[in-house]
Image (cartoon, rainbow, N blue to C red):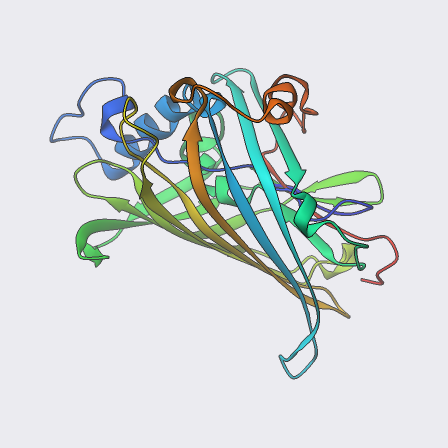
Length: 287
């Protein structure tokens, strides 16, 4: 999940939880919450390219008193592709802005892919984090196990700040709530472990919620990102971006699709081969 200051906004990859129906076999009762989550995320990667959805983004620039100083709203057809294994991992993201929401953009922070915070459990990133499970809690009425995670310095991380042509890895810590039975991640909160004001980033907080989504008659329901809120402060600015995901569909379950979505599914620009989310701010904005 990289962050950057350039002509593009905050870029983050989708983090989707895979239901037990797609997991590589049923987990044994002795499996830990982290092992359950790893199996779900690993299985999900194989299914990801078959999905697309609608994304609504509300970008807000906040004043010192917390009031909204400026805002931008946009809607997109959203598609993300993941490919890889423990030794090789790549994320491609495609967003097509809805014609109804096209306008002259203001200089705002762009955030994409933060819904992919779940990648901390993927085998490619898992060894880069320390995990500690807590006492069982209820999330939306279902038992879930909170798992605290913190990045290990020098190891891989799925997030980065993109600034003036460079990417700076972000060390994150936070909590993921994992459904006790399925191993699906149903909620995540994360933040920076250390102040990075020296390169223009004072704080970053992420909140992601995952909900069941119906994909059609021939596809089982999946637990997918529903909401991602990203709050960023620099020495001079404060931004809050809210991403809402809905209208999930499976390519294989549809008889007809928007041809533009199909074309971009094969031509989306690849992101960094080692990071899944990026934060980018307009170059005209002073950090």
